[in-house]
Image 1 (cartoon, rainbow, N blue to C red):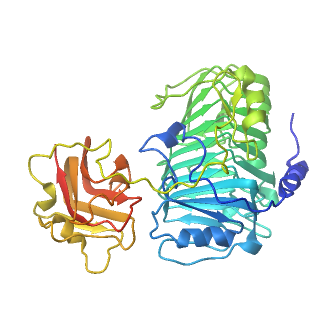
Image 2 (cartoon, rainbow, N blue to C red):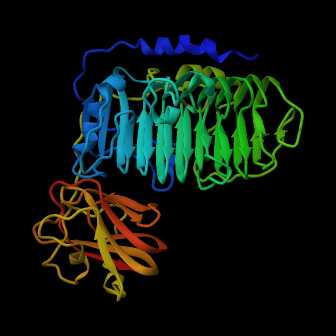
Image 3 (cartoon, rainbow, N blue to C red):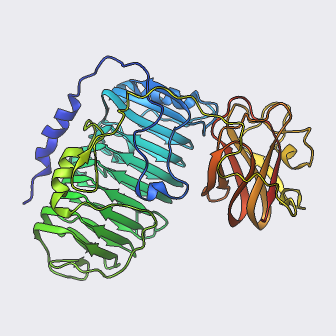
Length: 520
C-alpha cells in the first residue's frame, strides 16, 4: 500500500520539463469558468475579471504587473507562460503591491487572476503566498518542490499558502507537487491559517508530499474556513488531506490514492462533510488523529477500496472501518455529485494543469470549456450609464445616516484637491476622487449602525464613469452586494460600523459628490 515519498522525484522532474513555448498573442480577460463551492459565496470570487490583461514569463514580470496597477484593488489578469523560479523573480516596489524576491507575493492586494497559458506555467521551487488579500483566482498552474529547509527555500515550504485575513480564493486545475516529506525539506501543498475564509480547491492534483495541507496552524487557530475541496486527485500523501482545525470543510468527489498514514483529519471541533469520494490503497482516511481534541464528520456515498484502519486510542479516533456520521453540515450553495464509482476516472481526466480545463458534467462524463485561456478576446471594462441590476431607481427616504453626528469618512486614496469628507458634506459641488480610476470610499460610525440602502451621487460632468463596484462591510470585508454604475443600491439590512464602496473599474476618474446611507 505505502509508496516511499523518496521515489516521487521522477514526477517532479517530468513536470519541470514543460517546454517553454513562444509567447502567444495576449488574449483572455478572465479565468475560464466560475468559482464553485465556498468561494462562490460571501460575494463570490471573480479575480481580475473586468480589468486589464498582461502576459508574464518571469516572476519579476508578475510582480511588476501587480505594482503597475492604479491601486492595490485594481482588477488584473496575469497570464503566465514558462518557468518561474528564484533566478527570474525579484522584489518590485510600488504603492499597489508588497512583493518579495523568494516567492510570488500576493500581499495586501485584491481582484487578481493568475492563469497559466500557452505551453504551461511552472512555479519551480517557488511558492505562491497570499496574505491580507481577497478575491484571488489561481488557475492552470504547476507549483513544485517548494522547500522550507535546504536550498533554495520559499514560502515556508508551502506550494500555495494563505494567511492573515484572506478571503474568497479559488484555486482550480492546479498541480501541486513535492518530492518528499518534512525531513526532505518540504511542508504543505495547500495551507490556510490565521483567518483564511471562503476558499475552494477544485480539479487539482496534490502529489508526493508528506503533508497535503492544513486549515488552522494550531489547535487555537480556529477562525478559518469554510473551505470546499472537490474533484481533486490526492496521490502518495502521508497525511493532512486536509488537517482541519475548527473549520468547516465540504469534501466531495475527490480521488485519494495511497494516503500512507492518515487522510482527512478533523480535530479541535472541525467539521467535514464528506460526500461521494473514492479512497483507494490507503490507511485511516478519515477521523481525528494525533490529538484528543475531537472533530466531526458527515459521510455519504463514499467508496473505501482496500482501506485499512488503526485501533482507537486516546489520541487516535479513526472513523472506520464502517464510517458513520456524527454531525450534520449545512451547505449554502448548489452542487451536483458524481457517483463515487466514476471519481477515479473523472479525476485522472480532469485534475491538474494542462488538462484543457476539463470538468465533470455531474453525470460521470467530462466536458471541455467553450473557450480556452488563450482563445477569447481581451475585454475592456464594461461601463453602463444606467443603474445596475442591484440598484433601485427610487430615491431613498428617511435620514441620511452619513450626516449623523459622529459619522466620518475615509478611503484608499484621494486625488489632489479632493477630500474624503466631501462625500458627506451635503453638497454636490464638492467631491472625492481616487488617485486613479479605482479605489475605495467609506462612511464610518462610532457604534453599530444598520444600513440597507446607499445612494452614490456622481459630480456634475462625471455621471456614468463608475463601472463595476462592490459594497463591503468595511470592518470585516464581507461583500454586501456588487454591480455596475452609481445610484441607489439596496442590499439586506446590515449592522456595521463602516461601509465601503469599492470601485473596481471605471471609464475615467470617478467623482463621488455624496455617499448617502439609509436604514431602509
